[in-house]
Length: 459
Image (tube, rainbow, N blue to C red; front, side, top):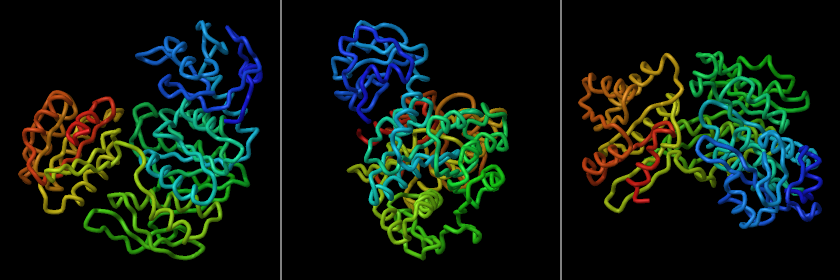
């Protein structure tokens, strides 16, 4: 965060000062929307959520070191009062970005955003100071918070951009216009809110490349036909990546080791280098290629890119997070969120990791799947059976029951159990597990299976 006085911030966001004794007091640290994450010298943005009102935590935030509170009403402590806190936070981020000169990299996609962002950040930060989205802070609040972590030394600003509906990316790219835009894929995440089909999702995701200027760079996945359909939607030069022979940045000779970690020959316009990822699952090849494509567009050589990918490790919790228990049981916690594409990839990765060991899948609902939800859950049940998982624990009523029924009706002999919630899943899994098992846990975040996964892992 570049130092700014409260008076200057008030001018930028159109705020009135409340209970402020010193308008020249400097904000020198990043902002936060969680009072527990306030750092001395920062600004606390009091947002109203479904369960809590940040204004109730204003005094505690100031006591914890916040210089002031960005609020929608006076809160009895130094505050910048505005009509819309979210909008004001965005205005502040845009102002700060205009005073800095980092290369802004925006990335979006239905699956793999956070892992790709983490890989890319680890490649770029070896080259120059880099700020990247924390966790999955990729929405109207999270993106400004990331921008406000940048300072005069920041060279690369890596912004994960989520889209729950059409227009979201148009808003986010308005706050932080990207020089480089990366589109990973088009799947079924949020399909219900976008119109019902992948073409609607593609229309929303394509807003990112539409925001690029003619001197920017668009990185498109050559393996995804919906992403390739965005070629005509950007003024920027295009660099294709993928496993397709037409991709300028591509993977050849892809293999999985005994721990289900992918290795491949990375091919770029600057040459070739061997990549050996530390993450499990063949689907990680696409994520790594996406990161490599951005780095290539930014001028990094193939050896430098490969070295960064080889050293990269998982940074975000709940995404194929592996815990080895002392009794030999392996927990694969992929419960941060779920859609058919990510669940399919996770099941395959867990099965590849297990090899000949017994496998248990603890699966809950995948949210926002629209009219096709029941069929998509049934498809996951059939996949569990086809991959020859030994046990399926389906968690919750409704669609998970379709998953259970589909698995049970197969001829592969999977033992199917149904439970009502995450707590029941934990009890049953604890009773069923045997030493040496590999347990894969996944569902949409609202199901609460992340708590189950952590408990199974002993956290």
